[in-house]
Length: 220
Image (cartoon, rainbow, N blue to C red; front, side, top):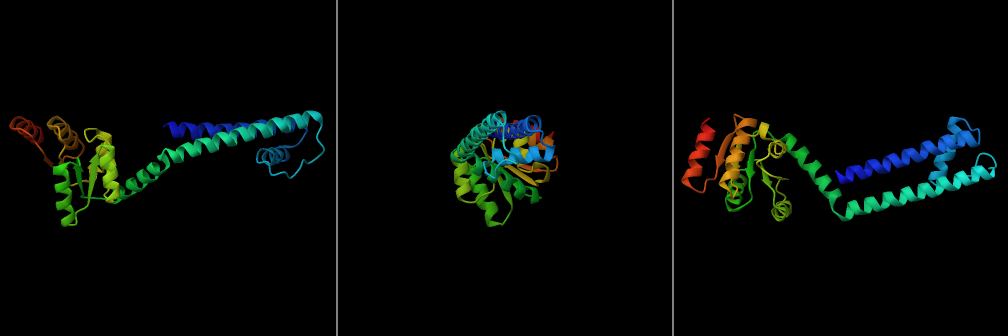
């Protein structure tokens, strides 16, 4: 969201400078719209084609203001883009788009919630049988491990509707929830059963009480 707001801010500044420049040249120089826009563009881009007619002192001052403004905006844009690259957000955005596209093609796949010991065993079995699956994990270090192994994954909380929707719960045939917390597994079962009533859900339960609650929840 921060990145998008910066991009929007840069875009609005560029458009504002072009509008101000065009209006300014139309008013100061008496140019028509096309000539005024042309002068504005070659000024803010500093291509140095030269003016259409000799400038008056007022026009020169306005042009200097426009050039300095455009340089400031350009510097801000470069700074924002550099921050975007250094923070790794660009690569995250590219990864998210790639993952969304891949999940969009899936149908009848398995969603594995949690990349702990049980989750890894489930993934190994699915891989051995060449089954398509998506892993949902919220720990950053686990996501890095999954990315390194080129395993399709979603970073997020599996107990939330939007996370399971990103993993394609509506088109999934199976869901395996192997989170460390029984309470979280119960939430996943509740959420998944509401989003896809036909999905077969397999849940980890650490104790008998949790097992009964999950079973009651699934039967309902």
